[in-house]
Image (cartoon, rainbow, N blue to C red; front, side, top):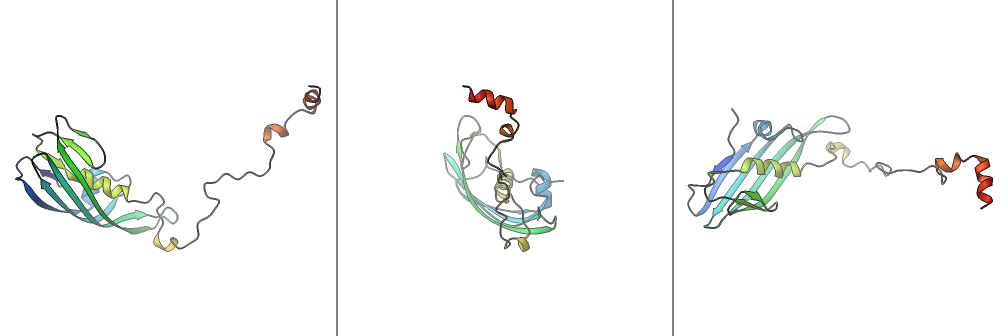
Length: 169
């Protein structure tokens, strides 16, 4: 059974509350394995509850097990994250921005697991290269269009008779 990464906020008193989580393979099985299949992280979440909002500080540190795009070798990618999210009380639940989320006064729990997963995924590089390839120079032609001649294929295929008619204009 997958662990619950929610924090009960309805019964929390005002003040600062600390929560620690171990994020392993079961965490990624629960929230998604599209970007990261495996990893090992320690997360520390600090909730500062007041009458009108809850300020959440996230400190996440660990390694994501990634697969190199070039060699298909697995490698550990170190990640260290420090983020802050404010949960404000309002009439209906909605996400105002990346840092501000509206929750209702009677909301029982906050799923901090989903937020931690999103924070980790955003730290994964688009191009996953094993550390042994990091020092190699980039290929300058990658992703660029290179033209071989100044004439387009349409210009090359014009019938010479049409070319003579153009001169008559």
